[in-house]
Image 1 (spheres, rainbow, N blue to C red):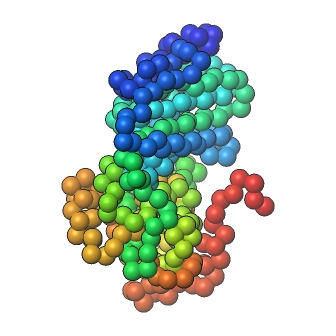
Image 2: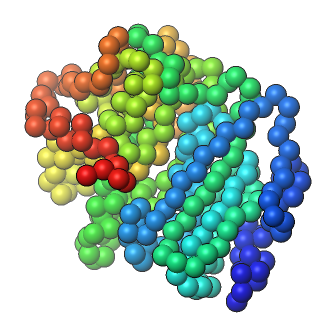
Image 3: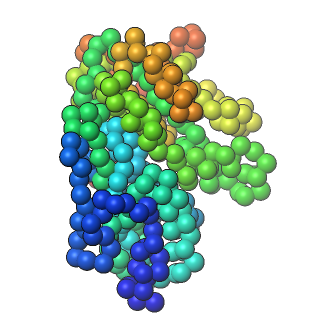
Length: 333
């Protein structure tokens, strides 16, 4: 099957159909119409075999994740997603793999009205790159900078699930089957971008960031952009029933579970700040959307992020350097 036939069979039908796509797949470049009064939001992310996923990872999961991680960036800006470009580097053509990959990507694209308008196919080591464009009303985008002393600090969902799921992939299949591992592995392989929540936070949140590298690191990025400090009460961190049950079953220490929540990464939740008097509105928004939003700390003057525990379980001092060094750097030592 040559490149033209691959595109016709697998990729031309993929994604939502949008009236604002003037020229999609089939020309040198795409043409899209940007509505008046909107700003364009652009992001891109790559998944590389051996770096972002293990060899043999399910193609369906890779298709879902390739789009989901980019959608999460769009959500953190309070925007809606519109158009994507897909670049695939494949070691060889495997029709079953491509069919599964598209089966993972297509439902998510259709659910969020994302049109595939172009891309590239090449031969080489497996890597997947999505470039995603979205729209936000002019002047209303959420940003990392904007938090102020006195704001409350929030996180969506239950950080730590994806990191636990990643650990579960190393378990023998028989050991995973009868436990909470499958549910947590699904949180890693099929993350849920908080698109509706991101849009709903416009006008409520003062600053927002998506949690991809770990709550501790990404919250610090938000604070640095805002020129503020904050304190997280670790006793308030939300923990899913699946993770709590698995931690008890595996006899994990509280410190181990805390590490997963704070620095495990790949949660693709939203960490954001808002004035505390807006808490009722935030909780009403979350309830309306069927989302979970938890107030985990407070923004203060200064710089940096500190951790406390209101349930009188002190944090072991040796844990703090782990969080300080938890930022993943592709080119770091």
